[in-house]
Image (cartoon, rainbow, N blue to C red; front, side, top):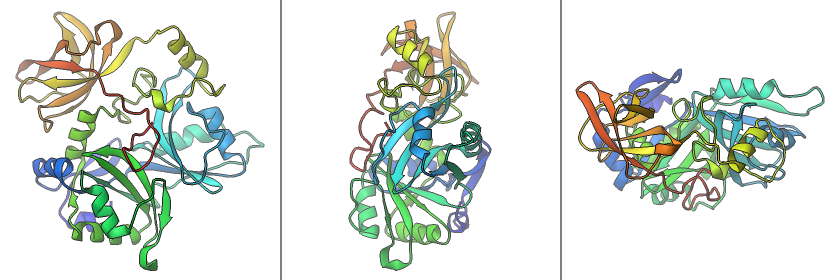
Amino acid sequence: MTETVMARGARTMEINGADVVIDYGAAEAEVAALRAGAAVMDRSAWSRLQLAGHDHLDFIQRMATNDFAQLPTGSGRATVFPDARGRMIDHVVVYGWEDEVVMVGGLGADKRLAQWLRQYIFFRDQVTVVDMTAATGMLTLYGPQGRALAEAVLGELPTEPYFFAPNGDVAALVAGSAPLGGHGINLIAEEPHLSALWARLTAAGARPVGYRAYEALRIEAGYPAYGYEITEAYNPLEAGLLGAVSFTKGCYIGQEVVARLDTYQKLKQHLMGLRFAAPVIAAPGVSLQMGMDSVGVLTSFSPLGDPPVGLGYVRASCAEDGATVSVLTPRGRANATLVALPGRWTRPYGFEGEVEG
């Protein structure tokens, strides 16, 4: 987190082993800014790795679910790094830049993913994996007015990732991110550039938002998150990350398992949205019930949704849009309607209609 962010009296909490701003004292107003205005969030704790060297794309090709035979400069592509069982280590977006890539992954995932990748670098591989998370920061602009505000501060945005240095005093990587409220734009930079960007964006009218408001819209949008829906308990097909998987590229770690699940339609569960009927507080990890039967597990929850919302994995035979499940809360059982997640994670990655997939 930047010094500027902390100076604003932000409330912080440790999540996935990383310190994040949870709110600025008015989470409901922050949600409103995400829905109707322009908002800026310090997402410096989200992982950022750099892969470089002559063989870096070949290395990603044999490690990841998507096709990286080529990644043109200025393009972005989402992928999953699975283990040998086809289960997820992390879901990342890979940005191509000249002879290297920058990967943005989950909150607090950097050390786990860097360790995972490094153990598969062979003796003759010309690949380096550098964890940039501590050395850089990342701000993300959200909201329906996010792009207009970004262009007012930074100038016209192209449709692909790029580096910029307005007035020669700020250097950053600008790239599309999964949208909340209409837009999503990542700004990755070193200090003091990040603090300068924060000051410019907030002076132009971007409202600072924290993790609680972000979670409300993330869950409403059906985006799976590292440590919640993206874990080594689930595979990318169960999580609905079809746009991050190539079924024609050939071998990668876990490929046979993923291909078999797709070919024979053997998914045990599906990620579903939940909309609660009344104000409620629910804890991720509780069972989803249909009558007396446990049919799944709640993985994410936000009371700030409209209505309160959640995500959960539901047994395939029960994962029907409009079905009712119940969860145990501190005030007893509460009902929620299952919602089939929209067709996100399937379009090309860019600034217009950005979807990580």
